[in-house]
Length: 100
Image (cartoon, rainbow, N blue to C red; front, side):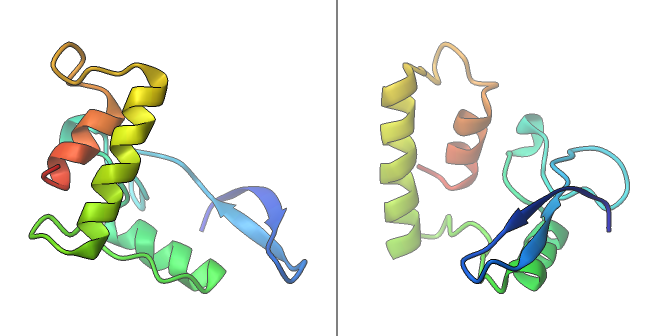
């Protein structure tokens, strides 16, 4: 595993930070053209290192999808992003992947 920066969690334990790479073997994130977001390997690595429970997108519907769509819409509004004008932005690609 390639690590860049050491951070700490709530227990003050040093944790390695995931590489934010979208290319090459072992990448943890998808390119915006592929739909943005984390890969399955990226989610697995994050969960292993932090004890988290990240899950894949839920495009079929449900509470997680509703919550994500509401949060991402607020981020778009805050940053003045219009997906009709700039569809290649990561937030727009992720919202398409979640079917928002």
